Image (cartoon, rainbow, N blue to C red):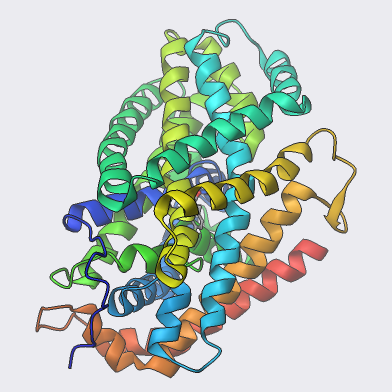
Length: 457
Ligand code: PFF
């Protein structure tokens, strides 16, 4: 039996499997995967962490990713409409709203950092990093984020770029852009990896990420890897469900999912190989997040021969990675308003973009004017938004998604629908059914409990 298709015959589809896969990798590979993954890997036993991460991807990331894509393609709807269609008259549609709230919140603070990446790309292009040392780099970053107006303007520019792509719709906007940007990202990354690993003393950085050191593996390592598998694959927010709703039934979802996972992981590893050998080679301490990218790396580039060029390439890479994740986040509410409320894409883009910008201003101001304001005790506005979206909303809607797929809708239907028009099943279906029903939900609950508990102690 095939479930009825949407009455909306005008609904756009990806032009092919490649467009879908590139856009999904674009969503997965972002600020989180580039500046968090390599460092967390390095701190938690390098290759040992990478192995644990791969197991977490298999037991948690893949099942949720697969479920989201299948649900979206079956219902041909946004996240809210998908649950309304597959479980009419039940409260399951709230799962869609939780995911959508996460996308709006994530984009509002993601655009703060997206704005910084654009500011740094511009600084790199004008050669501002050519002579700086670590102290000047620190002062430069402090003065960018410490002034109220400048980062808001960069944030606006980042959101205008994001909205400017989404407003053109699926094929002309998202697909065309990601088909151009993802290969560009690949080329930039390869150039940066080659430069970094051929520096004298690079081996220490390579070892930091890849050498399996089991003595650094603790219980925390497992939770870090689980949480990372979730955020870095963009699952839980309904992004992949929405992207799946544009996928033709001709495509087999398990194989597409495999491609997305393999390439996203390779990019995260390559990001590590582009960053840490250079950092170690020049004698800096490895770190993570904004300090790594906006303070350590400019100082590293300043010392490299032709460092100015590599700085331009790196900040372009980061801006591209952030942008392709941002468009996937914006697409979720846009799709919802078009499907459920028949808004035009123009109207939804302007209004949702405006709301996200408004919310985002508070997260940007939390580094200067609003630095004393805390939404959650102990956490400034930016960190509070991150905590609510990444540690509460994402795992909640991810857990509900997998429970819906495995128990309410049913594994048999899920696996059958995942094949699309293909008759053949995929290997180890029974094992997958077990993972989806039992293992993935228990693991999500474990991550949830760990993240909430660890952020309060
Ligand atoms: N995966 C993106 C990153 O690693 O930066 C972040 C992200 C995008 C998370 C989209 C969730 C999401 F729905």
